[in-house]
Image (cartoon, rainbow, N blue to C red):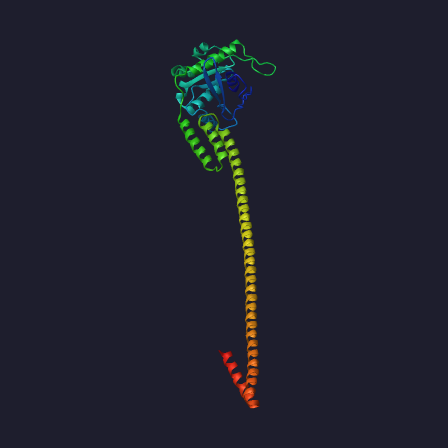
Length: 358
């Protein structure tokens, strides 16, 4: 199955093996642009129906995951019959497939008999085989297509040798896919779409950083458009969530550091202002003290000056008194001798006193 898809894609896009056990555990997708047909094909490889390592329920759930790759439906379902041998195992697988997808699946299917030389017309003509003929009748009624691919030889590097017959088989199969009338849709597609919406919304709601929100939007778009599987999305989502957490913690740390720096700057500014205010207060106090000192000295000087002026006036009074007394004494003596001198002195002294008081 995976080997056939690699032929259709034109490169080794899917892991394949010749073993009977299925090697595909999850849906995988690969795209290729066919320039001749002018169509871009998107091939989705699914787990095998007969995967013995998974329960039928698990296989069914894994199969439905292709709804993530093809949200608008699938143009064709390739049902691969390995080695062209239709046996009881293939019959059981087809019954299981039909139970998963319903009878409508055959209208949109292309049954590919892989690695066989049997031609499609031979297969269509089978009416007798126990396991195949009932399905042939069903496929005819559903207008299912049948294609065959010859066994492909490989080179020394185990790469397929694309001879003319192989290339023609690939062209026929691609043409059969293109000519399908309408895509196959199922309720599972809508369930897948709803689940994708829920997942993307939940993933976005838990993010906080701009960068990782943009990254999440990118993968959400790829998931919704069917360019990314569910498993790939979950893996990428975990990386984005972890990156967002780291960046958020870094931003919180940087914000805390900025807050602490701003706080330290504010405290330093307040300390500087307090220091300036203290210096200004000290200068003001010093100036006030200097002015008080000057005022005190001026008051002392004024008081000293007043004292000196008072002393000077007092000294002038004493001179006048003496002079008056002398003059009075002289005058008294001239008038009346000793007794007159005494009287004159008293009179002059009284006069001088009167003058001083005045």
